[in-house]
Amino acid sequence: MARAQTQFESFHRTILFGYESSQDLRDRRDTLLADLKKNISANAPPYTTFNQGSYALNTGIHPLDGNPDMDIGVLFECSPGDYPDPLVLKKYVRDALERHNRTVNIRRPCVTVTYSRDEAPLHHIDLAVYCSNAAGQTQIAWCRESTPLADREWKPSEAQELTEKITSQFSGRDRDQFRRCVRAFKRWRDEKIGHKNTPSIGLTVAAYNWFVPRYDSIDGKSVDLIALRDLVDAMLARWTGSRLQVHLSVAPYSDLFERMTDNQMIDLKSRLEELRDALNEAEAQADTYEACKILRKKFGEDFAVPEKSDTTKQTSAGVSTSGRSA
Image (cartoon, rainbow, N blue to C red):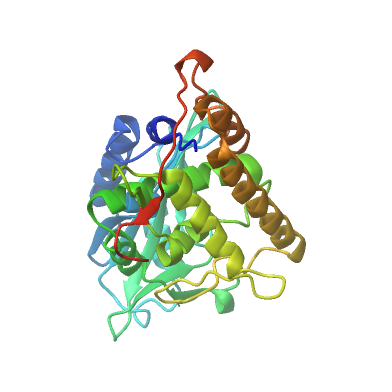
């Protein structure tokens, strides 16, 4: 049975995109935060910042559109009652960051800073604006400039708690395999899902819920192909009626796939079934070359197919778990 573990690990190194591996994006972040500190209105309350999203989770990938992003939280030391209009704080952030080489826009969930070259976007950084209520729960400023005053709101959003839960779910080799499989899953999404209503955070939280590390029972080596196949199986087994629900484990506990239409959900299930079948078919191959040809059709051109002369026939007595489940 082919496992293609060498190719899965090479694929991971190719698609990996993180805070530590992107000096340019890291420099942009540091410059933005310095500008925010220097230029923010004297009327703004004190604040702290933190990484969130895929960079805090260390699950970022190179986007196919070439426009990578980073997520930053800006937590102001105030309560929703101090600023019943959350747009006030978002404008403080927007105004502090406006410069000639940036486009800064207030979107509903965040303030987005976009960097471009020759009118083509290079990357962007999203800054979500938070405060804390009397119970210490973080609330996100949820509004655009065009949002009517009555509809501007503070919504529960525990981004730091979510990061802590996901990053502490696994450790050591289990964590390494979890991150490789999440990154592969996200690249599959980018290659095969033609809409944005299947968010990558939904796949990450699904993996947090149902991923189980897998190792060869003979040599103890990681078997990403089986771990990913079992994750896909677990997701398919949890379809309820016509839909899959993946809820956040922190406030606001929302279904991360709730924006998907019924047709998009049907498409997601069909493509997950195709991915599962491809992973099974790849495992059944005696030759790594043939297995990788199958896998490349699902994960894209960055999944390397070895020269046929370099492939080997692989057999294994079985797969074991790490001894813990997600």
